[in-house]
Image (cartoon, each protein chain N blue to C red):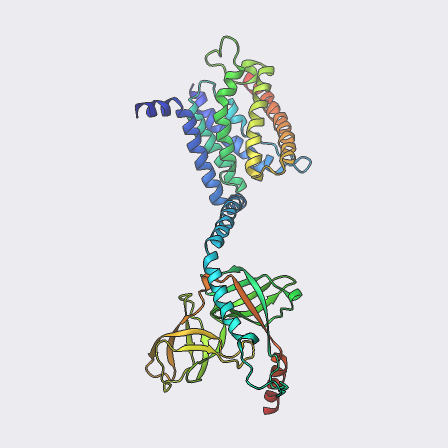
Length: 171
Length: 278
């Protein structure tokens, strides 16, 4: 338990730094931007207070925003993700519900479950984020294309991060 | 009330989400120019559409006044028609009229846009170079001077209104013929100021001020304003005169553009004279 209290703030800082200093400079095919930082929200324990998740998501998004000078953009998208997370978790729940203290990760609930969970979360977050960024629906399919490529890109990174993290945990 | 509280408690998570999201968007609009201007553009479109509807409605409501002004003008013009004059000489006396030459030609135009609230106001008219309109022509309304054409495109003309702080119109007193300039001080759209009238001239409240015709942009003797108050400024040679404009710029709908046939000739000869002075 004590370990968790330290790991989450540490994760928070690491995610913000990786996102702002490394990933924000990567753009595949000129349009796809990976957003790994939301993995922090996805990884929060299932039984975390929903309101607390919203607060954490707001702070996380705002921290990213401060680096990219887009105050409010990532914050709003992260808060949206925090809002839909309980519903996604509900929809994906095993028949007899989640066991206590099982983390929403591949090691806790398996790769199949985790990838579905991450894909839905990432897509919803990117959908919200990209539409706030362009702020119009007139180029709907252009924006949709960017959302899908970025979602794919982010998912690959999230899977890699998950593999890396499982290895660390095993050791 | 209890139901309301129960409702809010039931959906407290959603309301929390909404509140935080509103905060995020508040920050977004405050700090990001693009999103803010998109948002404002959208609201502008909405309000702009509303304004158009409102102006159409206003046009309709003011039809009675427009008609009134037009018929008043018709009456005046009818009085000047040849049918309203009596023949003075017997039929066997032939008068060949070579005394009169047409000096001014008029074109009518609809006011498309008009402002009165700024310091420098302009009007837009529905005529342009295709109607023979040129820069520098005078514009008059049913009740006197309106302004001077500034820019002309193929179909539109923009007019420097009398309600423009830089616009100076040469005018004179109808009774005593003393001339001065009419220039607006930017305060009230119903009033304008008369400058360059020396202190010794006797003035009365209610004196009519007409165009002088000196510049040849406007025909002479066009009633434009009425003196409202006269003030003597200590140590100055000229009066401070406040006039009330005869035309209400807020309800201008139709105006006339004055084309002067002698303007170029006059300008040429006046330019020559100045050249020889040196």
